[in-house]
Length: 447
Ligand code: ADP
Image 1 (cartoon, rainbow, N blue to C red):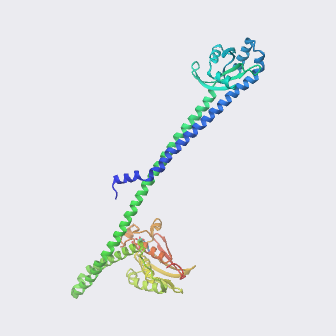
Image 2 (image 1 turned 180 degrees about the vertical axis):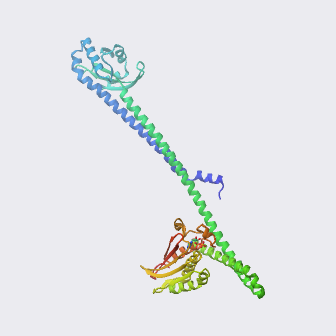
């Protein structure tokens, strides 16, 4: 197991940081750039429209202004009306340029007119002979205002300037709304990114854990494989010595030792079975389980298994009924089929307290179908999906009494699938179970 410090080192050096960093930097940056870009073009558009507003106001007033250019009193009234009727206007002034100096000729407000006369934009407007607009801070109003200055004159001499001061309230409102919306979107985005990042690290941690578990699982498989190989020799010797010992016991002592001898027999048999099952598990997991296909008479294999289990069934008072069927020989491994049937029929006998165990063989589609049904304790419905799992045993009072490892059905399923067949179970808890296995009829099928 890697040390904690090593784990952290791995976490920091790996590319796991690149992806979240790109996200956390790139997305908000793009959003900010996009917002500023939009605000900039919005400002440009506003500038254009403000100038346009001032120019069109001047265009509509020009004939009157030029007509009354020598009557400042009347012009003042016109300009005052313009400001009063247009809620965006703060002031309007007409300046006359004389010897490079600009003097107010008419105005809606005298104070504003004096300020307008000194506006820097006037120089640009006269110099370039086109309208200019600019945003300035008005200390009296304590807010930003737009100043627009439009050159005009009687005989295209541009001797005059029309200067208007406009409120920015509508524009400000739009700008504020846009900035507020952008900030909200930015905050939501950052939260979403943080959630995504948390998720990302959680997955990463899980991936590391899964990798570690896979390694542990591999170690465990190797251990089982080595341990079962090492155990096989002493257990075989144990069985041999037990037989030798039995031979040396004086016949008159045998009845008094019978219970102990039977228990020893049972325990060594259990140990032998466990080791064989563990060896099968490691062979299957390492892909070393070999199948040797040959022409096989399934009826014959089943009959032999039934005969071998008959004493066990009769001992429990169970009927073991076999229904053979006319089926052709198939290419399969008879030893593996025998192992599978011993397991399934053996289980039925083990988990049936009274009644019968029936074995029936038939053909369905392109498969030989073998049904093993019993009137046993049955399997709870919630256990059925886990039944073929490794080391899985149903935990209830009735099965506690029965000896077993929970490996038989897992091994059986692996072998059946290796032989190209399928296996499944149906059961009514308390009434009995039926295990169905199929094997391919066709020689070309996988074996
Ligand atoms: P074992 O019999 O060694 O415990 P198996 O893998 O053969 O292991 O079986 C797994 C579990 O399935 C058993 O512990 C038992 O609870 C249940 N089981 C298998 N066959 C039957 C059956 N015919 N009737 C009822 N329960 C069964």
